[in-house]
Length: 506
Image (tube, rainbow, N blue to C red):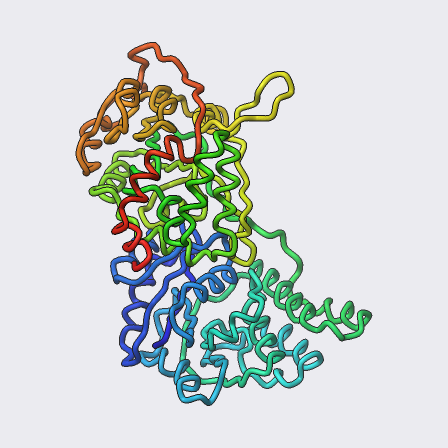
């Protein structure tokens, strides 16, 4: 079989067409869409075609390509762009067949189009001097390629415009058999002059970095081959400033029906180690750091696969869609990992995430974690900051100018208690104890999240100050653990071996 990997960023208008075209092949395939944290409807559109969608751990095509490779189940991988509407119907066959027939290990495409300026004036001159064996490739910057996974696992993926030329050079240096195939006429958008300037710099840098043994003085001369004046790079920023109406869900056991860390520990056969952590440590930061260490050497694809095995709460997707239609900004918070939360965020069209950052190096977990400042409460007497998820409420108010009274919070456990108390409307979803129910304004019983729509005001029909305080609340600075009340919950999970089997076999 063949794995098709499609890195995408804001390609909601084209991705379904591309997927349908790919599916015309007679070859046995799987399709993996790797979303680069799109801000449009790319993810929802891709999911309509019943393909696997994963979320990249950080922005950049190279990271998306590498993480797509990690998620791929098969040894032949075909990479295609998600924004090209003119692929031939046999595009997969053209790229994969030389490898299927054992004639090549790496296949590069070329296609009919106007000459690319960066290709002609930067890439080819540098290749001709530094890597003359590659100078005859018609379009060395083409991103439509196929390769054996065994070769891809040993190369470096640049995370900018240099990724395609870098892969070509690395494959050459590894002795791969390289073929170039004509895929007909492909129409894609011309790059702006600003992007061409950035592209020329990054392509030339990638080529020069690969030429380790070339004389330094000559490299300095060659590095001046640029056709476009230098431009300031423009960052893509997500801004949630000036928010007025916000709903925040706890991710674990509200949006997801089970706790991610528990299920991941079981899937990776680390449940005994997790139990020991919960039994021997009480400080939340100790629990977080030691729990993160359990996932060392697990790659992003493995981590996200566990998340995809956990069912969503019934009605979650529909409720989030309706909340956004009513004018709410929707977020999720978790004591778990940002890469997993971002994946769920993109699948459901959620606006933002507050989570701890699991360190990934080349998309593989290092076992280390960074706790963001919005989860840390400063203590007096020069004591180190303590972990307190409810500190997030003050962070939101200060940074995004959104009053706590304009926040609806949905949670169910001990770690949610303070948040439920502080929010303008605290909604306890199947609360785990009477204490949680007592601090909430409203309670939802039953599996579905749909009753939330009857609780949340329709802000388009009421005055702006829709959440005036109705009662005095105490702000509970109770201690929070990543897995608060974890020993009890974990014991129940441990007894359910069926759940473990589902997590392992999904």
